[in-house]
Length: 456
Image 1 (tube, rainbow, N blue to C red):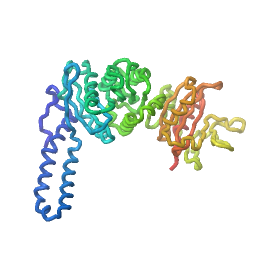
Image 2: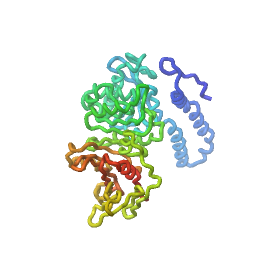
Image 3: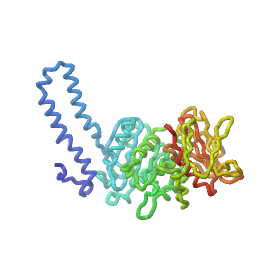
Image 4: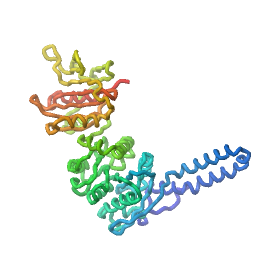
């Protein structure tokens, strides 16, 4: 019945479907929920009169809670000025000493952040989702062509509003256009003014080495526009960004806020909360790790795909099941397996036969109680790297194997380049995988590691 209500948005343009749904939701309480609650209370007045006072208070509280639950997320709308004479309109969610500004992409608006804003508010943040100039009621110089306007001033105005109203720290999450503006705002800000930045399918428009905030970049590997893939530019800006920083590469092609419309939405939100909530010292320690998160393949496989190497068919491979330590992997049917004997760590060698013994192509080592504090694999890995001469490492990063996180580094020795990959086994134990790079068996080693599974 509400579909026929004519609603206009910025500069007289018809609202999108999403905008209509948001505006109609605001009408819903006044037109539907309010009258229903009034009818319930009025119609049951006689019944209430017969109850004792305790039951009456309970009933009234219950009805009030039901009514208020519908409007609990209908947040206060505010406005504030920008330094160049503009006015920004925004929605506020939650309360807390940590503030988060949500900066939308070119095809979105402040209402598009509602679900993420509520999640952040429930985690203790005060959240401000705003409309850039030229969107909704927000206005300012250049609002006729927002892409060419000084949008970073809108971000700075939002950050300063939260700080002026009690926030002790403020971070910014920006999608696409909003991410670029957030980066530019960090560059133009005073030191410490913006605590952390989350770039969704975005990077600063200005040189990233000028950023004054810790940064988390999240991008889908195949995200592209008419000019081609976005990843190369984002990766280039990421490499220039000062520490602490992280890069998360997701499977698929969804761009920026569209990631929240995919089956990876929960993963994206979890990573954002982890980054915004973590101790900055811990974040800095983990920042040496370049994180690559994928659904079904590891960073090894990513490189293999990039080099045009065909993945081996593992459908007929043999399953190695280790009941003692509770894991399994698959390996080529012409390989053999040999386990070490003696003192820990227990080592298992996989490879082709050579003079009646296993020529170790891939080595798996189980190191018991190597993680007694039950750190995440990123935190544990960062501690190991701090004790090493990282200048000798060819590469380092993190990925997903067996449905859980793993971290790796590559290094060169007299026999060539090798890769070491680490993941957790039952929280306190560490499983390590070692193999040589650049050999004919490297694709098989990648596939063996990707087949790793923890047994129930």
